[in-house]
Length: 287
Ligand SMILES: Cc1ncc(C[n+]2csc(CCOP(=O)(O)OP(=O)(O)O)c2C)c(N)n1
Image (tube, rainbow, N blue to C red; front, side, top):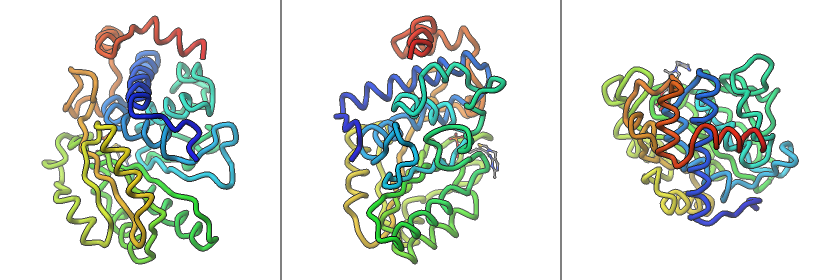
C-alpha cells in the first residue's frame, strides 16, 4: 500500500511543490543540477505519492518496494521527494551541498534515509535493480522494484546487459522509468549519440513497453498501474519530458543540465511556479 494514495489533482499539486523545492534549494546552494530534476518531477511524484509501497517512518521496512534512482545527479528532485514524503525534515533541503549536510551533491545511502543506493556514476542502477528483483523473486515475495534512468544514460553499455538479464529471468516485478527529455550534459541526445528508436529496442530485448507523456499525470499513473499488473516480462515506461519543465527560460535547454539558477533567475522561476524565494524557503525552514 502506498501511504498517500493521492489523486491526480493532489499529485499535480505535489509535483508543483517539488519544483518549488528544487528551485529554492538550488538558489540557496548555488550549486547543483536544475534540468533533469524538473523533468522527472511528475513521474517521481506519481511513484512516491500513489504507487510505491513504502514507509517513510521506517525506511528499512523489510516489506517495502524498492526504487533505485540510477541518475544520482537529479539529487535536488530525490531529496525533495523524500522530504515531502516525510523521510527527513523539509528544512534539511536548505542544507543541500553544504559542509556537514547529509544531502550531498550525489546521494549517499549511508547518510540519507530513503536512498536505496548511492548513485552518480551512470549506468549502474538497472543492474542493481535487476539483482534486487531477482532476489525478491527467489524469496517468493511480492515486493516491486523500480528504477529511474535518464535518456543520455541509455548510452551506457552496462544498461543493455541488465536489459537482457531482466528479460531472460522474466523479472515482471521490475519497472524501469526513463526520463526521455531529449537533452543531456553535452546537448541534444539525438546529436550526442542517438538512442532512438528506444521503445523498439526495449521491445526487441523482450520488455513490455509503455511510451507516454511524462508530464501527464493520468498517463503516468495509468502506465505505472499497468506495469504492476503485467506478468511474464519486465516493464519500462518511456516518459517523454522537457528538460527544465515548468521554468520557461530553462525548458529544452541542455545548458541547464548541471547549473543552478542565480538568485534573480531563481526569483523569476519561483514567480512562474506561483511563489517567491522568501515564501518557499520559509515553508522549508519551518517544515
Ligand atoms: C559513468 C558516467 N559517465 C559520465 C557521467 C557524467 N554525466 C553526468 S550526467 C550526464 C548526462 C546524463 O544525461 P541524461 O541521462 O539524459 O540526464 P539529464 O541530462 O536529462 O539530467 C553525464 C554524461 C557520469 N555521471 N557517469
